[in-house]
Length: 112
Ligand code: 5GP
Ligand code: ZN
Image: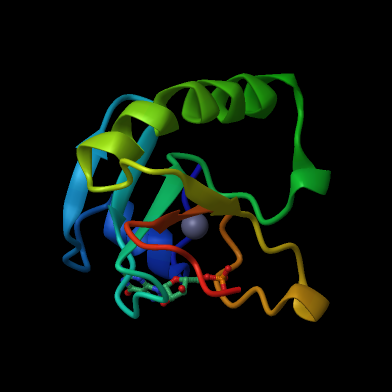
């Protein structure tokens, strides 16, 4: 289920352009518009939910699928010497888009 106002749902529906690097039935991976590292990708499930706390069994399977695909996607996009995954959860983490997503950061030695 997608959300009308959510920016990532708009990207999933093709209403906002994005630099896609991978897509399948469960997920879309595209470049972050404000990259915080040389390689900064966002992996987004094709289902709108905000938090890991909103997970059910179906969503857990999707997340598991995403995690299984990420190593190859990261390597193909320039993360050949490691990378970092970040999933911001809520206000204290600075989450700004309330559609669960996995940041994939790398392509350089991360300074933090
Ligand atoms: P959060 O802070 O919620 O964990 O991460 C949201 C991320 O989405 C930010 O890194 C931000 O740069 C990225 N972002 C926000 N709007 C857009 C957009 O329209 N297109 C793309 N490609 N990235 C976006
Ligand atoms: Zn959404």
